[in-house]
Length: 110
Image (spheres, rainbow, N blue to C red):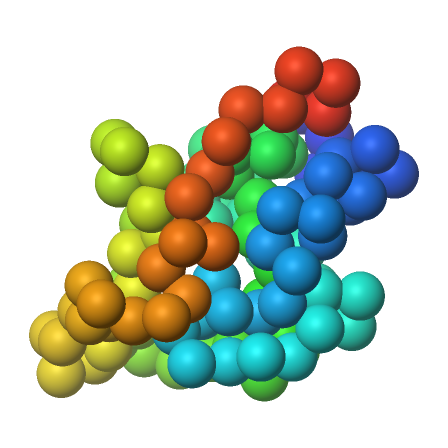
């Protein structure tokens, strides 16, 4: 059975990787105050893994989870893709894009 709650090692690795809620374009809230969110929801088969978790501040976590029309996905090259209800993707030159790269974690990857 896949666990829902990330381990302490996963939390440390993801907070270090993400640093802020900038996984959501334009947000600079510190990762220490962020929720760890399953990009692909756990209830829909999303793994509790570093490749499927990201830091989102409470506001953006609630937006993703409860507001209709928002879409989040991880692209094959490891970028968190956010699409608004209007169908607009985050701009590719957004300053947060470098933090959107997901790198494998040898110690906390699962």
